[in-house]
Amino acid sequence: MERIIIGVDPHKLSATIEVVDDHERRLGHGRFTTDKAGYTAMLTYAKAWPARTWAVEGANGVGRPLAQRLLEGGEDVVDVPAKLAARVRLFDTGHNRKTDAHDAHSIAMVAVRTQGLRMLRPDGELEALRMLVDRREALSRRRVQTVDRLQALLAELLPGQAKKDLTTGQAKRMLASVRPRDIAGRTRRRIAAEELAELVAVESKMKKANAELKVIVLARGSHLMDLRGVGPVVAARVLADVGEVARFADRNRFASWTGTAPLDASSGEHSRHRLSRAGDRRMNHMIHIAAISQIRLDTDGRAYYRRKRAEGKRPLEAIRCLKRRISDAIYRQLVTDAAAAAAAAVKAPDAGPGGHRGASHVSSAAGSNPLTSASDQPLPGPAPTTLRRTATTRKTHLHATG
Image (cartoon, rainbow, N blue to C red; front, side, top):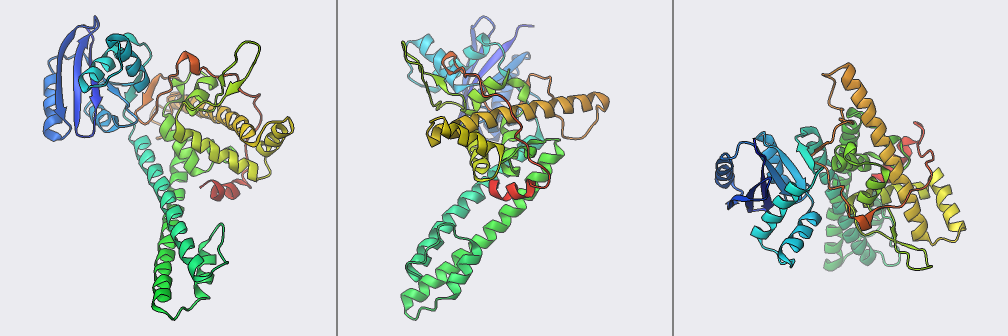
């Protein structure tokens, strides 16, 4: 039976599709709303082609809700990177002007012409993990905003006594030491007390979220938290966004995806490399958190950072070297965990929820695009070293890494 590709340009309120066959002949097209009626109409329209595969652009971004609905309905779905769709649109049309119809056509063409696109699969546990870590990160942003407001109020109530890293205990003592008598001062103190109460509540929620994430990460058989500087939030984000580590050919591809691989910018007799702005910036931030945690504590990462500084590298350059080192360590741990899960699955096919199908090329819908262009190919990373922490020091790093 001939394979049919349905290219989907997804938006929050609508989805534009184009149906093509293996010979790139257009068989149909349409625009549907994403509400229940529109989604049902789109599926009804697609039933004319039984051997269909949905190609959704950005299945980890704006296309995630639609991709998840299709997966839950038993449909075959592949993820099309936006970068590849943009290239096809430029080559096919001679310009890069975007319309929903052009986008749907380009997405379908990518799926027809490209081998090795990620075939998504439903994974409810990873989807739940993604939602929980998103919630934890939102709480962290909310805490920062609350602390900023509270510091501004305390600076007015107690001039010259501002704290750089304000804790709830310090704020309580500072607030208890002031008793303004004018109406403006009393109002300022009351608002500060309300901000402090919100800060206490947010930190309590963050603590509970950390504990919940830690339980889920360990339940999946992950040992990411054994790495120095990697706490439950970083580990959960890595698991949720990576999905299946088997979709990365090697640590270099993984480093390209995390944005920790420097790019060759050599010219003539001058050999140099520049910072890569490509890759998943959220994952890059997680690795940055781990790097800063290692530098602050007495770790092998700190010693490595100091060696790079002694070699003449600037602080940011040395941090980038350490981040690549951590990226490699995370990749190795993911591969090790996947192999262990695969071996356990062979022995006990009905084993618990921790299985990462390490030998599979089918990726979770919670993952992100690992594909890079030829110009984004990474350089070889530093030699591997031990970046693990002992069980007795793990608790110390959990608070530091969130």
